[in-house]
Length: 312
Image (tube, rainbow, N blue to C red):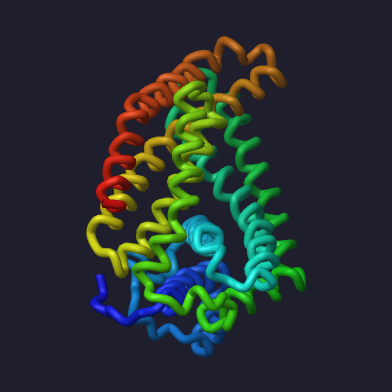
């Protein structure tokens, strides 16, 4: 927590946006390209989020992951604190961020699927089947990377990069953002918490993968929002963020295992003779999902307790 009693909400948010933007540039562009852009950006921030330092990852897939996370966090800040931005700027920006998030998401999701299948692949005794599965996953990954490279060659992408590079210095705030940071940021979180409660209520009645995944999405948004609020509100907000992170991470495993099992099912549909050879590996992912799903309601309850403590 930074002791800046006179800080306004726009200063805090600008610092956070700048931090996420720098991480995006470092990981989505080449070292030379990002270096040039970073020289022209601010980079001097007072309100820095702990554990969110901008740095370039060592592997290509690690860079994709970090770029995707940065885009998601940029979107979260713009959505949670939507009332503090000029809608003529934030609306189009959210559209473009959503577009590129989908580009990166396809690659990252396939990497998660590939990693999940690989950890259980040895359960298949027939080596030729293991080889075909690996080939098909690698082929899908290659196609996704080619599509991603094509999108990064477009003018649309170039314009988005320019927008992200200057997002921390854009004069795109509504007059309300000039108010005291603690008061203004706190007032913006009510809608985010309502979205978490609504999604969790639906999931309690029907804990389908789709409903649990929606809970995870809303928790990610709450986590990001409370990390921002924690810069001026201190530990109570940070505790909400950590509880939300723990819960959404558990639900992430639930989702990933469900996706792996669904993909294996599609393989059985395409190759009916593989039903028996794939039975054990499908059961492996089913059990892993059930184990990860256990206790999610208690985790949500913990998030709510910490939220109530924050609200006083």
